[in-house]
View 1 (cartoon, one colour):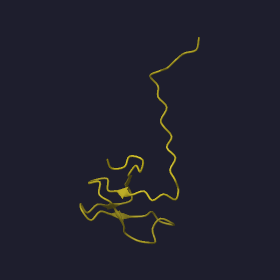
View 2 (cartoon, rainbow, N blue to C red):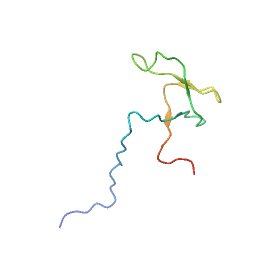
View 3 (cartoon, rainbow, N blue to C red):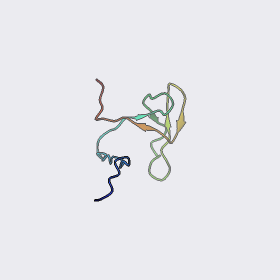
View 4 (cartoon, rainbow, N blue to C red):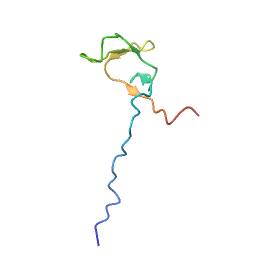
Length: 70
């Protein structure tokens, strides 16, 4: 009889569509971010700016397109 570890869960693998446009959200207030420069993202990290709270940085959250607005 094999050990059955029902308490251990494997993280769900989520595949992202490469060409799909996913809104990037501010980690502070969850509003859409704006790109600071068109040059970022290739050789240097892309900076984003939030016009609502003033956040500026590299980190962002992605909206889940499968969980659209109800």
